[in-house]
Image 1 (cartoon, rainbow, N blue to C red):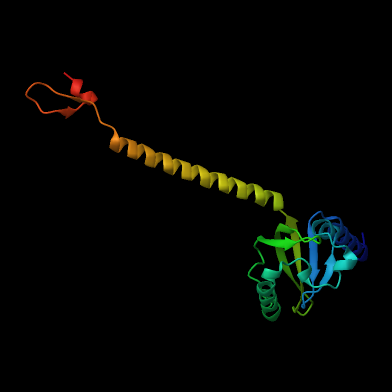
Image 2 (tube, rainbow, N blue to C red):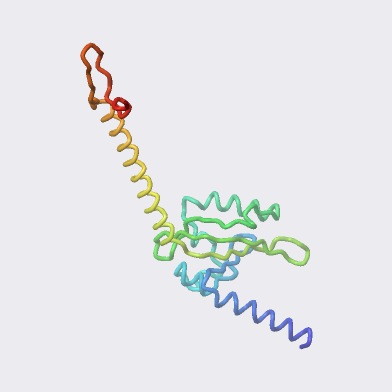
Amino acid sequence: MSESSSTVDQDWLARVLVAESPEAIVVTDPQGLITLWNAGAVTMFGFSTDEAMGASLDLIIPVKLRDRHWRGYQHTMDTGVTKYGDSLLAVPALHRDGHQLSIEFSVALLRDDSGAVVGISAVMREVTERRAAEKALRAKLAEAERTVTALRAAVADLNDRVTRPTMSVQGWSEQPCTAASFDA
């Protein structure tokens, strides 16, 4: 296989991989405008490719998180450094119909041949159901811990109030009855 056909095959493979991935793959330029929005992003967020292309990431960022997001985004564009490069991030996001999603994603800085940052890519997966199940389990665990604490307190209180059996031998003071009391 010649070098040029190998390059074409690699380019084709990259295009197909991005296009067919069930994960949302989104690329933005230095201003945070969307330059790539794959089929996984369409499925996850509900916006068509035509609606998303050229739009701001505000499309999917909850209003209360936008200021923080854009400060971090601008810092990354200015410095060429992201503290999240090898981390899996978990954040809320918005669907087109307005409902909130829980997503996990990783980011990669995209650099031109001179090393300048020309964009950021994010590969995202929706984890809303898993997060809801984890939240429900945490609530059940907290309730179980409260029940155990209450039971321990009740047992301690009961122990404080219970009159222990005693035995008395003529002329001896009453002593608590224990198993050792009956040893010969």
